[in-house]
Amino acid sequence: MSTTPSRPTGQTAPSWRNWSGLESADGLEVVQPADAVEVAEIVRRARDAGRTVKSAGTGHSFTGIATPRHVHLRPERMRGIVAVDRDAMTVTALAGTQLKVFNAELARLGLSLHNMGDIAEQTLAGAISTGTHGTGGRAAGLAAQVVGLELVTGTGEVLRASAAENPDVLDLARVGLGALGVLTTITFAVEPLFLLRAEEQPMSWTDALAAFDDLTAAHDHVDMYWFPHSDRMLTKRNTRLGTDLTAAEPLARWRAWLDDDLLSNKVFGAQTAALNLVPRAIPAANRFASRLLGPRTYTDLAHKVFTTERDVVFREMEYAVPREAGLDALRECRTAFERSGLTVSFPVEIRVAPADDVPLSTSYDRDSFYLAFHTHRRADHHAYFAVMEPILRAHGGRPHWGKLHTLDAADVAGLYPRLPDVLALRERLDPDRVFANAYLERVLGG
Image 1 (cartoon, rainbow, N blue to C red):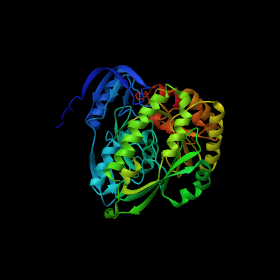
Image 2 (image 1 turned 45 degrees about the vertical axis):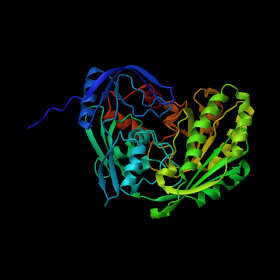
Image 3 (image 1 turned 90 degrees about the horizontal axis):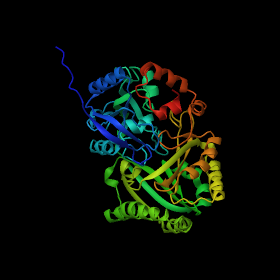
């Protein structure tokens, strides 16, 4: 006996806007499905009507990768863990689950991802589809930790992919840019919950660069921040300590509030907003702020060390250059910045990643060195990014899919040797381009 699936709730909303405020859309049909069956119904209806569908979660991409044109699929009803396999050490979750919720639920189960980025607001689907990554470790990118997924294709088919079932789809859809289907569940390889010892220390530019290779060799995860207009770096070194959780020595609550809430968010946000009005004060403010940084060491659950709260809205561009070219690219960027006469109040973030086998990952088939440039949301980012981007491109840089860049389909084709495979799968799974939008047309072609 068959049953007719319930129709997902929908309404017409006046607009959608992403977190940074750079992307928006008006006059959308907003639908909130609860499962893959309802997603498939939405997709089939849109295809029949010649309309497009886009699943946009928390809107944390700076680019238009998730910007909807017609039907905005919201994932609030598709959240939570649905399966735990302790023999295989995998966990399956609904794709609309936010990373911060997933991390907390994994910790409750005594489990953890191997690595993650420093922001955890994104949905799982958005994070893997844009190539979100951390630094160091055996696998820096979230997508490299994906061992299975379920998606709804552009023809309304519910398709499952794993090493045993549709392995070609798993291979390519781990970073699929939202072009191959709507992700409904994702299965991650996990490991026992572990501790990280975090060591944060300010260093001079010269000392930090001289020690960079030694630091990345000696510690599991290394992250650095250079403060423009200064000679100062903040270095962050995270070292795995194992699974004895009784050895945790987290920051005192008052210290965590002071450093991470008050200073890093409220004070920093107010300062950078004020400096937009008097940009000539930025160099002195950066030098002063970099001198205030002091060392700190603590030990906590992995996700509490990896991720941080970010309340200050900003704009960002990030590129991955080959690891061996990274320090040269960083030096060239500093030289070009200082010659430009620009003033920038946000630090430059520096990370590294091991090569992976995900075809559209920025670290596909090569060790990578990431350089991320930020501005306050009310500062003009265009001139700053225009100075940096040619240097990164000259070194063969690949841009983060969810962060600002100017590449088009011809540029992308020269950076990703397996792009033809992705385009062929797109033709198979979404022949009518139900999942198209302006960004995908720019980077993948029409």
